[in-house]
Length: 325
Image (cartoon, rainbow, N blue to C red; front, side, top):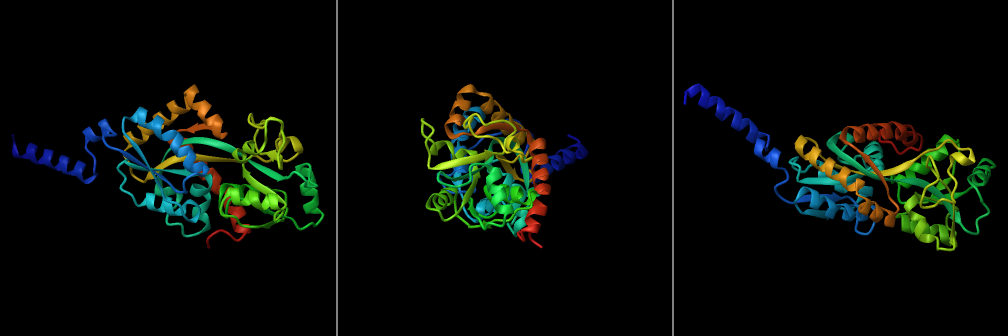
């Protein structure tokens, strides 16, 4: 072998090693277990979603998916840790509209939306508003009229900066309304405050509501509206905001991200596995059990969705004094 040819080959090999990946690794990905960081505790919607997807992704990728719960600061702790992980495609995480688009605007979370490579959006749920069953407010219009009349009303959701909190903040701002927010650490805690009379209304993702309504339609709550384009299949009797005269659409969504710089092959394979999983009728039946809507977006479209959400959230957060200066 000529010396020049040999040195060229050594240089090329060294360059590949410095990037932490070789052509064989990229082509064969994955060759070992993948860690899936869930930035919330066990039992919540994000955790349930991860545990539903894990077996399907294992089957399609041929490697175990190891779920790692890292709760704290409304999802910021887990995602900040994820941003610092080695970008080799073997550590990924679950993000959402609030954790990826809003949280970086609010405080020093340790990451920005650009700290991650987007992989695929998975599911969504419409935002919704509810009151206790004995509430005097029968419709959104009733609630809005009360606020416009100067009534001091309180509300709660699953924590400052969460999807439900931001969804209601957007609705109030769009309609030039003001109500007092009472913080809660979870959607369950906020629902308890609604049922006990501590707050007047509740903001939460649509999946909160069907489990609270029996087969006869009886419930301790009254869902006033869901922010979807059409009536939601899981609650067909609940009108949309649009039907009641409010031009308001707001869904909460979840997707997979990874530390910036992971191999393109990893993004392509995981994204394809997500898309195939969501197209499976059997898996769609599982989603029905938890009231999630399939909402696949590829890597590029998910990135666009994050940027769009951030633009919508920023003026709301600034007006509420929640944006970092």
